[in-house]
Image (cartoon, rainbow, N blue to C red; front, side, top):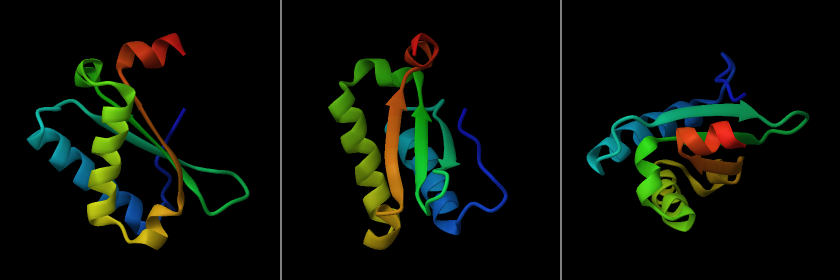
Length: 95
């Protein structure tokens, strides 16, 4: 499962804080954001889990999250994200 390590780069904290704040403003109150380093690389995976995602198509979820990321991360920092997974709690359990 995804976890935040003590050695996570500062850009991941900025991303997490922005996601929590901006998603809350969009009416997504319960978002859980977790990150995980990709072994043997400098890349990181991000998972955003929110019940309110059930009302959005996967492409809408991705557009929303990447729009927020692009506002708080430099292009170089964005390149250090290997993927962002956007799921509901039910989708996470079914996986």
